[in-house]
Length: 440
Image (cartoon, rainbow, N blue to C red; front, side, top):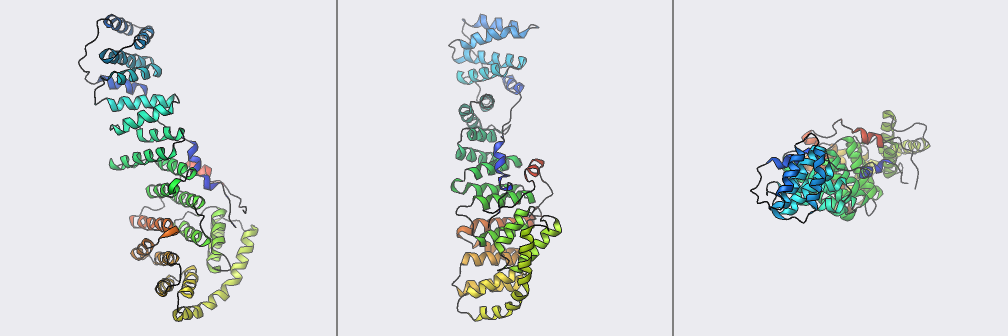
């Protein structure tokens, strides 16, 4: 049984927003205040420039606008085109006319006379204006050119990514967003959380080549709150291809619990279903009693009543069988009994014995080594043997590798003392409302 919830869309809903930023129009005008190049203006347009400058110097500078637009409409090139563009930028700034500013920026760029040190900024403003006007093809091209030319302000890389997203060019946009985040790291700063959440949301909707796993990992690596751990693990689980097995889901849910990211009934029910009250009754009892104590599951829930009753009824016999299972595990020719017994011991938090039997299972063979390695890593986490746990997780291959990587990241955050800061963005909290479980 799988439980459905709106929370798994929490990150995906970020895709409905944007990363767009808009530079103030006067910033574009500020670019022209740098030392201007030496220009040779054609005699034919000198009187027109003089008339424009005279009108701009009056109390009614708007009278210069038709003159500037007429000049821009002429087939100008080189210095003439550059000067016309500069006049348009200046007047557009005065009049707060972004359309005129954009025409001026583009004329300056087209002239080929824009100073090299100003080109990156001019490309950004051109792209920014195009984005605001909904011309996303032009915006994506200009913004990436600005980024590639070394412009680093105003979230240029994130805006370039957003322009690509608007064009449904998701791979290109994610690549651009990744570059923007790496740029922030190179500057010694951290990219905003919204960038990571946006990337995770887009990646989840368009899970090409495991993009969802990569971006959810990046999110929780940069911002390791309980809420983000929950988002990351939920998104990974729901977008995993192939779908996680019950055992793999259990390994993931155990990490969610460790990361203090269990909040909704869906989380507890998903975990209890993966553990199975008939297979690991002690763990199911511990889990649901914890959920009841925290108020995260309802005592009136039919699922809780029935599952707890089944699990509690099975605990005594399960515990009583363990000593014989341990003896059989040691004498068995293969590791199958050792693996099953280690799972049971782990569920009762007998981590040291569990670790020994996982190692025995691996040594004897005949078992899924990746599964045994995962169990060994979790058993060492229970003992806070961080180095041994990371070593075990590092040996995990195949479909479990991403889950093991998440565990290793969590261990690193424990060492750094950065896990689970009490920061939950208000917008995320609003998404994660009360959930009613249903079955597939």
